[in-house]
Image (cartoon, rainbow, N blue to C red):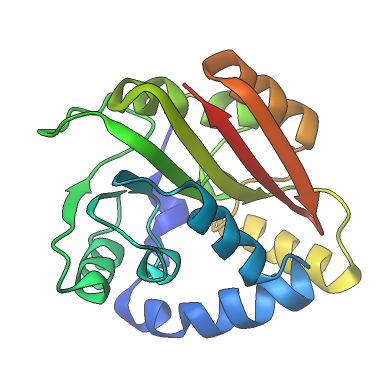
Length: 208
């Protein structure tokens, strides 16, 4: 499956307004999940050896007490912006396609965030959930996996309209995404799965 379309929009210009549009406006008014809720998810679960998958702009990572961090993304613009944002911490960046096998030159991670990535991947949740087959081997036994994704559920009129536009443009691919499917996928690969719905966003956490 082609993962390029969902990430192609994130050029340097779009990334400059990402925090304002997505974290400042969309999360509050369209998806109805305040950015602070996702920030708290990061603060509660980030470890001393962390991997962030689908890095965005590095907004959440910058607020965490990081010691060792690896960045995984298909988009080189996002990787570069996040690396620069985290300075002087030297984050290792890996340009990878999460729907293909991944090999990294580092030790297994103690925690991994997969934030606002799943709704950008192609296919239904069973298909895009294949990413966890390739991400799980990168994790230590007992490691924590957490993140969030926008579902096709509980949208207000503004959110419903924006989501349809994003799906038409190929930015999102989540018209068939629901809590039950997400739960099945996570339970297939992990244990102790917890999902909380805030607005139309699923906040999830699981262990290896």
